[in-house]
Length: 165
Image (cartoon, rainbow, N blue to C red; front, side):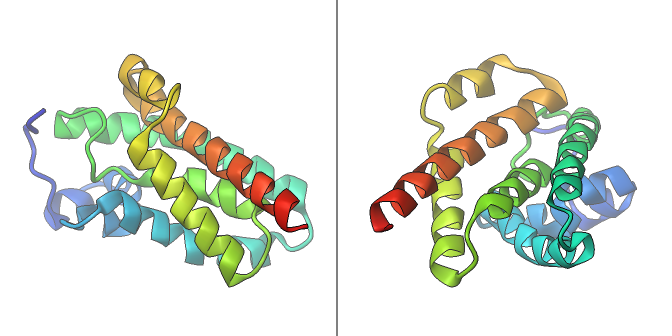
């Protein structure tokens, strides 16, 4: 689908909603914008983990609020661009991967595995992800398929952890 507005830094900086939807500009990457957006989740997670401290429930509630905010952000930016799920809109990847990181054990192996698994499922879109990606419209559709990819990644991490002991 062609866009009526070609996203540029000018577009991203034209409104705070676009700046957030484009992952602080990471979605403008010409190479793998979804992957770049997912990488943005690492420093955000580190900051939020310190900020929320031991309050895991509040952290999870905050991620849920980000999901709800993302429905509006991604919906508005998609309408303004003229393409509902433009590849540069990466707020969905950021929020879904924050959720993955929340449940991922500490350490390079686990976080790298979480990253690779999430990107694998987000790109490949196995059933039912592809179905919902096609059928759900607007900001909710943009956000929901990444939530499913997060679920698949977490399921795989749990299986790996159970086999490794």
